[in-house]
Length: 407
Image 1: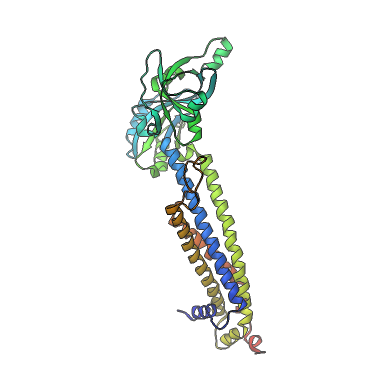
Image 2: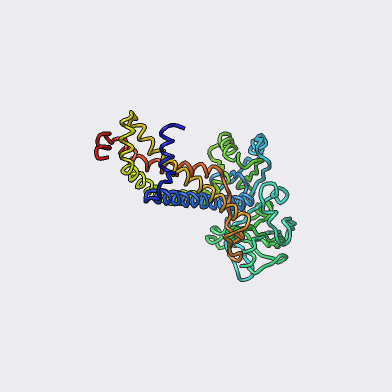
């Protein structure tokens, strides 16, 4: 232990008297502890919600989607299939047709998104097959009646159940039908399955039909290709590889790109929460600034004696910097431990439950990431170090004669 650290430690733990400066130091440690713990807990809750949203969306959506710009669709599927088969990270892929259409049930009609998929391959690229709560995700089309799977909320609003029949009108022929007074293409469908994805948008606006039925409604060309990877963390890598091999008229989107607006908002909220809670630590460091400044005044004689013995201004400055850093490190360490304890209790015992009638989860989700502890600790200690600069420089600038003249 260096001389500067030894003296700083003695000043901090002096038991001679419980003075005003010592009380301020304890308040500083308490403030930093609370601020650090709040940062850890809030960031862990954000992590929990982020992972929850990602698992819901990625469990339902593909990892990567390839689409072609314009209305023509994909006309060269064989060449795309050859490229996709050469990517080792791709686990499975399947063509799809996605278009808006009007669904009609009795006197009720709604505009929704119709997804034409291969029911034999859909389970390999999407989780919709696992979300069926009534019926099955198997299409048995005939010339008169096709098969369709609806979201639970959509089925409820239409007032239909498994086994009922509905009609779907293609949007691609509506404009022409309005101009030429002809009817748009309408097909009859039987509901074979109802799914619940825990996502209101999907459950309310999505329906699935077979690829041949979609081609009958919207045209023969595929609108996109959905891809599932062996490891979702390789999404950006595979996306870049595909973009390099495909022409510019193809659009390659990763799971993040498909919901970029949502993730951007969540990221902004996370940073705002991080900055605001850092201000709690910053407020606590004002106490460090005040306590160190008063310590410099109280230890004026000691500073003069140390300088008269040959201690440089740099050494004097280090003493008070170390004292402030010790307060910051103590508060940060206690805050990390407190935050870790609160997160553990929430994970194990659900201290903060949620109303199951409103939310799809029983309690606040929490996910611990060790990098958050690193970022929070570094930010807290850096803020505390900043508070030590002024008083340490003031101590270093004292003249020995002036310091001990009246002692």
